[in-house]
Image 1: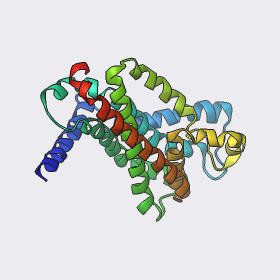
Image 2: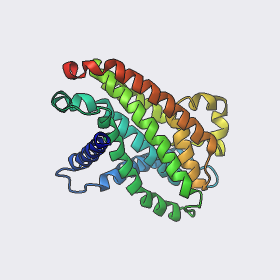
Image 3: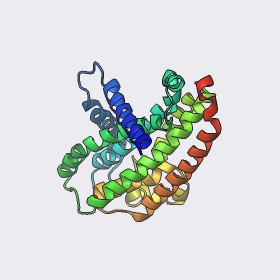
Image 4: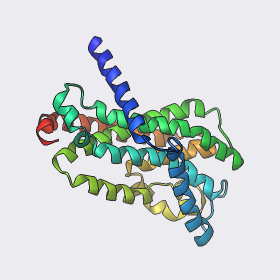
Length: 262
């Protein structure tokens, strides 16, 4: 019991350190976690909504759908990017201190989870501006989707972080893959309604092979429509559990090389 208590305390300290380091000497601090996804949504709205003429799904404006998809994507994107370098970046700590190394990527993902949670009131404000708002389904939908995203993001981050110890070029490859994943994740389009859903219907099954697709689609369904999509959530949990098993197996196989290589 004492050992688990120590590990929990360490996880708390690591998460707190991540929060302090991210915004050290930053004038705006937490606001950057809100401004980044809002800025991206703004760029896509101007480029696609105003210039190209892309419209919403018929029930909600395009800018609102962008915002509801961009915030959960930003959590996923930031965590995977940071976790890829988490073991290499903490090489001295790994060499000098005996602890569960799995706590390092977990602290990184929890850090981004905190920022996402703090951003929810901002999302609610935009929903109210767009003529909608929270529903009773949020009471269980938000915790369940958050748990699914936590499991999936942590597991994938642990995989990329572990492999990056041996293959340092992986960090650049992950950045490219995440950029590609963005466009096969339903952020700037919808899987379920509107003209975009009709156009991509033949490719829907392939899009859902992307682990982030069902997750973001589930968030957009909950935030925009106030409905909890069980199928999207179940698929996300399935991807997350498979990735978790793979991550733990990979970590056990390669952890002996960490002190020497990291």
